[in-house]
Image (cartoon, rainbow, N blue to C red; front, side, top):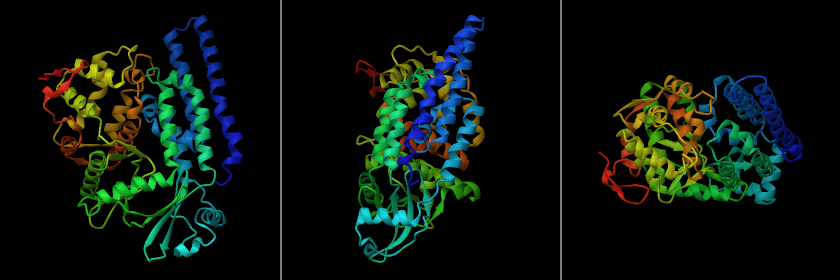
Length: 450
């Protein structure tokens, strides 16, 4: 990992192959149209080949390109398994095979960040990392006051590599437009770049983690280890033992998996209301079930700052959808930016697409399952331009919210969790339980929803 800056030319070369490949496929498509194939069939072929190329290249890169692929999980719902399957496998391989920094490099970073006397801060320091991720790794140590701590160290050059990937990706707007013509890709990329830049600043992460730790101190459901010390590239936190959520997924009893799923949803929904922030990286590695039954939460590098809590429109439109008023839902989605003004969408097709995802909020108790998720993915793998998911936009204010919901649903399906998830929405999501008479229409007047 320490050679990230020196590999910049190679990384740029990989990304630079994408527009050229797209141009070649577009020319090929024109030739086929002249030869008699229908424009829609040709467009479908071009889109499929474009998608294959995009996912192949993104899967070979770490840093910004990989994070883009993770964040835009809407791609995975919109495209066939034969395209995204190898991509997911490449991401998994990259994550599992992230080589740890050698001890000499770790010590060099600590000297640069904490001074030549860095060892005086610790009674002991384990040179072998306990975890490695895309931009840093974690070591267990004992702080000078005797507390066990986790020391998170950023890879040298990680920031330059991440932002370099995004500089390249920002030139590929046309390419992504082939896959999702309803998406304002430039705006989404800009939003993601800003959020990724925040992840590189460990001082900003420490501020967020401390806010969560204060709010949930003594909470009956959650525990967040507090920050001990931090600067831009080193973050020292209280150590937290527990059973990783990934182990609960594979080895937990049904009761344990249900409880973990309920607490997981409660944490994601209550945080914006209680802390003004949403944890934006909800994969199983960031959660632990503690011996006292609480859910422990780690890694606050990616947070969505929501000082007013969840957008009220989110709860309102979910409730109105459950009441069957698609006209008001369509109007609200346009107002929020999910449907761009120049795009027409069939209301029945949109209802059919949204219904399964809204279902957990419409019933008293719901069971998430891999089969349920596969059924939803199978319903949207049509690459024709008329496919609803390909006509929808992702407003910048919802980029991280979407990332959390998509990843969160995946975790719940892995858990196979059954719980009263609707109760959590009623309690924590503004607008969902409001008096229908308070819903504004686009002109600011109340709407009486039956």
